[in-house]
Image 1 (tube, one colour):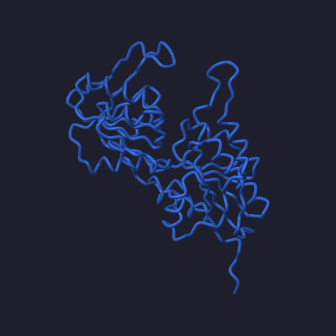
Image 2 (tube, helix red, strand yellow):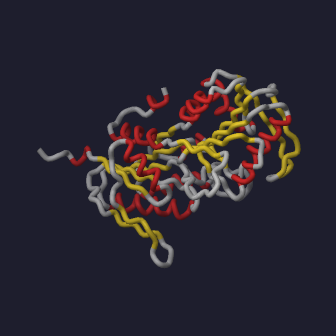
Image 3 (tube, helix red, strand yellow):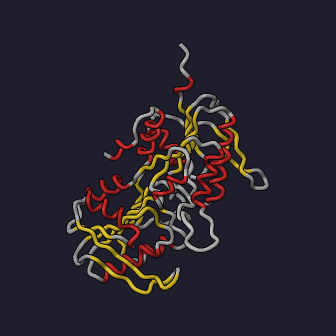
Length: 316
């Protein structure tokens, strides 16, 4: 009896994080689909899907991490090519959703680029999106298609539980991270400290304040991403001055822009834990940086989407 084509699943990857995509596919016993994703001599994205996708459930894994524009354009071209090849459904899998920090008008005459990217993905032909730890949860509402939002926090929490840190306390690096910090504090059954700061300009801090007693405590600072590391390092120095002992941080997306890693090495932070949503293989020096894989979590989510099962059970 011929296999029902509508039940078949196929996973493709762009060039953003091919190693991660391969690990996701292998975690569920799949091989990546055959696609040529490259460049024309003048630099334009060039895509050709070599596998037959007609009537299939297609997943395209592509973080829009640096180079963000190139990776986003690759993803859009792949979606368009697969849509025109008559796929049954296309799920854009963005382990890291670039442009997420541009989610509102925080000053006059600026774009809301997170919404623009959502429109581009939908217009290109994506039927749903799978992502992890959006910088702002409301970005899910920018889409008119289903969005499945995964959390890396349980993986980080299990990692720190195994460390068996004594006198543990969770802290924010700024007031914006308080919701995630409360989640960590609840799951690790510990107290919460809050670092708040008053800015005198985009790159300068006028004053910092602390709610909570961190003296003699091992501190974990959670957040969704780390770019330059400036806010995190300022908070770590402040907590250290207030008597904190060892300071750890965990950020889902490790962008490490500019000299971020060098600054972390020279800071009071003992360890920064990130996931592999953004490739770290090209980094020459990952001292103080630990990378945990979320490939199996994405693999399980992809399987559940394909089988029309709930995603929420992954976090129970």
